[in-house]
Length: 253
Ligand SMILES: NC(=O)c1ccc[n+]([C@@H]2O[C@H](COP(=O)([O-])OP(=O)(O)OC[C@H]3O[C@@H](n4cnc5c(N)ncnc54)[C@H](O)[C@@H]3O)[C@@H](O)[C@H]2O)c1
Image (cartoon, rainbow, N blue to C red):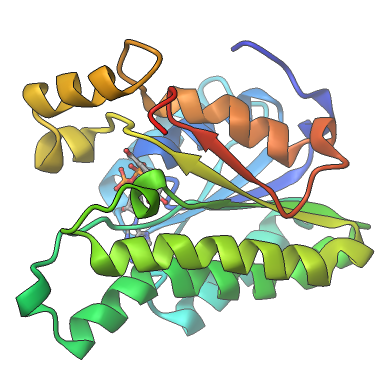
């Protein structure tokens, strides 16, 4: 790991969608910093395997909570559980999402709402549920995962792109509201990150090569590339930074 953030040691960190992909890399990284980590995910098998793997090395064994973030009551219950297990919460990482492709002509209102529920709505309600504990602790940091996808005119992702653009508005509004409580809110916009899901569903070798061609950096980005930006925005190293968006795309834009 390129940098260490000692202020994160012992802090309560909650990560949504931490069972696989970028979220799993973040769970591992915050554990390596000595943070007390809880993560929510719908995927039980991957999440339990991650806990078993990290339990060997982490100073604090990560706590997995099975929850479907589309269900706001379940989300609120899971966050209450996390706050209780962690003894407070300093950092919330809103990471979970699902980038399903949709045909313009085939989208119905239910499918549109479903996409907002899995990609956008939970980020607000997770913040709402975590903020009282952050206030009690004297402050905190919220890191919202958006995407450069909404800046790339990708026609097959209208609902996802809308949600990811909405996250920027949400980030700035929450930052304005929560700044007086010493709670910072920032967003990360990843570029093409070759997680297992991306490789399985959307990005074959030719797509990956085409993506690298568009980047300044001539290599594939991996989940671990999102760790540095997220730890930085979560830690006091970025104490004066709020309401900002950080693009981590290898220079695709
Ligand atoms: N991978 C990329 O190229 C890329 C690019 C831009 C933005 N992003 C963003 O980065 C974040 C992480 O992406 P990723 O590629 O690691 O995704 P991923 O699909 O690999 O992982 C997402 C995690 O969220 C969980 N999840 C999905 N739906 C859920 C639900 N209803 N309830 C609870 N958990 C649920 C999944 O089980 C999974 O563990 C997302 O916000 C994504 O939009 C990723």
